Length: 135
Image: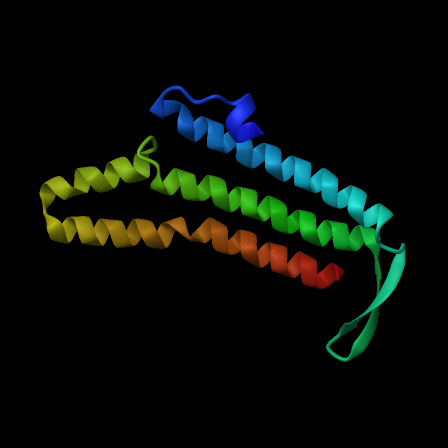
């Protein structure tokens, strides 16, 4: 609905903002949906097996695990867009490095590629840590 009805795209430059809005809206709606499902469909406490040991988990802890993953995905989406969109400086800097030669372009591109994965790796690591700690 948001892609076709609410955010009509008439120009090419309107695509990226519409995708950003859709990503944020879907994350917020899924967070609310998961909250409702976890409080209605799941029992208040239940037991899971954690490396051979039983662990008592509450429904809000599972909600927290899923929502941390959703919001980490949102962060990854924004970081990915920043490092791959031609509207932002990283892509423009790579394009400028092409003027000095192929070697400079390759080195700059590799360095930027390594730099671009720092935040997503931390987002994934934190979401794994939080999820494993709670459930």
